[in-house]
Image 1 (tube, rainbow, N blue to C red):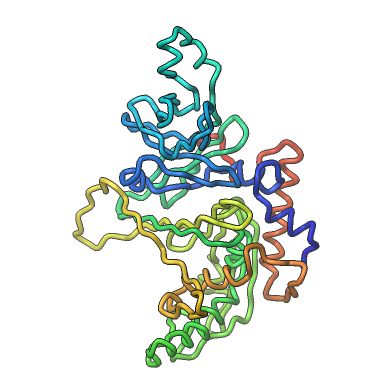
Image 2: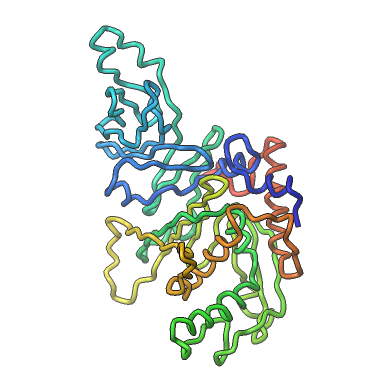
Amino acid sequence: MLTAEENELLTKVGPGTPMGDLMRRYWQPIAASVQLKEEPVRPIRLLGEDLVLYRDESGTLGLVDTKCAHRRVDLQFGIPTPDGLRCPYHGWLYDNTGQCIEMPYDEAEGNGSFKEKIKIKSYPVQELRGLIFAYLGPQPTPLLPNWDFFTWDDVHYDVGSCIIPCNYLQIMENSLDPVHVEWLHTHFSNYVLKRLGHEDLKRQGFSEGGRPLRHTKIGFDVFKYGMVKRRVMENTDENHLYWMMGHPIVFPNILKTTGFQYRIPIDDNNTYHWWFFPHLLPEGADRTPQEEIPYYDVPLPMVDQKGNKPWSLLDNNGGQDIMMWITQGFVSDRTQEKLSLSDKGIIRYRQLLKENLDAIARGEDPMNVFRDPT
């Protein structure tokens, strides 16, 4: 278990906190490109900061403070122009650096130079494969990582997300816990199917003949880009891909499966969960590049006010995982946990977070901050 101080160190992500400082060293996905087609100005809360993401009429992206410097109204109601975002209250216009470039009344009164003194907070943003990424950290800005899934041309992509009412750490720790697959995604999954009237259906992959398979060995390695978790099931050995290749977690907050799952802290109590998946095209399919990458909302399984459980959303791995994260509370009380041998990956991940906090304290870049294009 952790002390209260250790738990706070690893879970608080607001401005001025050590973990918030670490997370700000990375490009984080904050929206799907197509979401700005539907609504070109969107409020964004990220790492405890309230911001506004917009695309102006020339196509330029901006991420700026949510409040106008004049009378502090909310810029989520701002008007996109060819040059930036205009405050709806008195028409002050900001470019994507946060610089005020127009003050209509002041300019009419001959006070045009005043705008040069006005600048609101702004952060760099970039688009990649249908996702919009933001960087909130210190300068110089590192490179946006061009991970392998972003480079494929013979696939079609899609993007999904939801906001999960819990701290990012309990989501990430789930990814360092191989044994939960045996129980949550087989035993519990079969129970859910039974509740839904599908007793004839059994989970595949980690079951054999309808019987859930047991883990006989798990292992974890830190490698260049994060951690790899490995497993041996009762019907496999160390020559199987489950052990030889393993399953990577890309530091600090990405699970890599057949796609990427990003876990982005909104604040201490809420997390953006982004799913980015490439889909292989069948032989002979049209391989014309996608004009836009589609987006979908992922439903959130929540117990309603009458205590009814969302069984219809719990027949899949994603829904099962989300429910387990939520049931731990906004921030899991790790002073009360009783870790066992199956939790060695969680323990190592916490150590890796602390090691990278120490690297920042020494003035070094943490793991996976890239500055060399090669």
